[in-house]
Image (tube, rainbow, N blue to C red; front, side, top):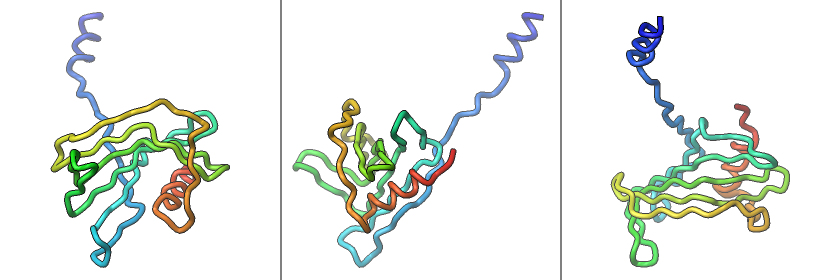
Length: 134
C-alpha cells in the first residue's frame, strides 16, 4: 500500500500556479512611451488591514534609471490600504528583455504609505485590488 501511494505521488504531475494578469491601464501612442500596467489577480491577498498584489508594467522603449539600470518591464509588490486610499511598495524587480537587471525589497512600514493621486494609474490599481474578491 505504501509503495502504491509513493508511486502515485511521484507519478502525479505538479500543477504550477501561473500568473493571471489583468490589464488595468494602457498609455497609447500619443504618450512618450507606450506602457501597459497589469495586476496578477492570483496574487491579490488580504493581509491584516491591507490588500497586496503584484503589478507588472511593460514598456515599448527601454527606460534608463539613474544611468545604471536599464529596463523595459518591471514587477512591483504593492500593499494597499483601501480605507485610507494609500499604497506602499515592498519589492521591485526590473527586467530588460526578460533578464533581471535590478531587484530590491524592504519591510512593510505602516508609517510610510503614500497617498494615491486621483485619476492616475495608481488609483486604477487601488480600485481594482480593493474591489477584487478572491
